[in-house]
Image (cartoon, rainbow, N blue to C red; front, top):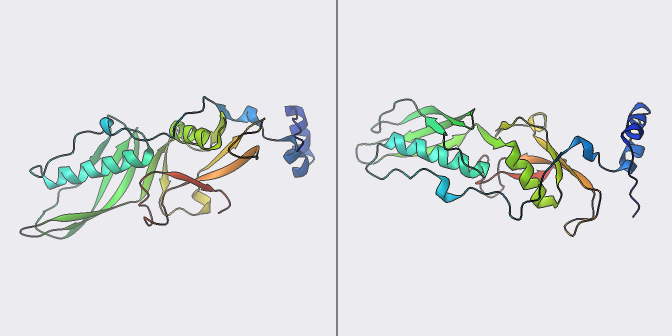
Length: 215
């Protein structure tokens, strides 16, 4: 397979001529991407970085808030020692529906929490409306998965990805390389950040992952 490496001037000419075939032949525009070392392992939350889990004797609200921070950190594949979750006051003796807020690396996301209260037992169900993803972590995961130093995710430094977002809200990442890799024969590609897994259900993926951008 022949790879044509083009100058930026050639790319500009191709754009001006509206020539997608020429652009494709030029290969990936590595200059538009961010470069960094390829991690040996996929980024993942270190258990030691989590705050200690509240015990059974702790207030139930505190345990709910800890669970939200824990889930947020695990999904994001990284920790934030300043992460906080806050829920409005509720009674553990009554059924209720509340909205909690978690702040992770400065970005806020909402969680819908259903409280199943009672005189002797209480439980909760927590569903996120959005999921925080740190751009640096996402790009490092993509470097590891695609075996390339050059990637770019089109997102804020800390992005809240809507769980129920459609194609218009998808967060996409590009990757490219100028040499072959044992992982794939392709030289470039685009993926999107996935907030759920088919097995776990909507919004219940334990960690964010990538899916084909066209899927």
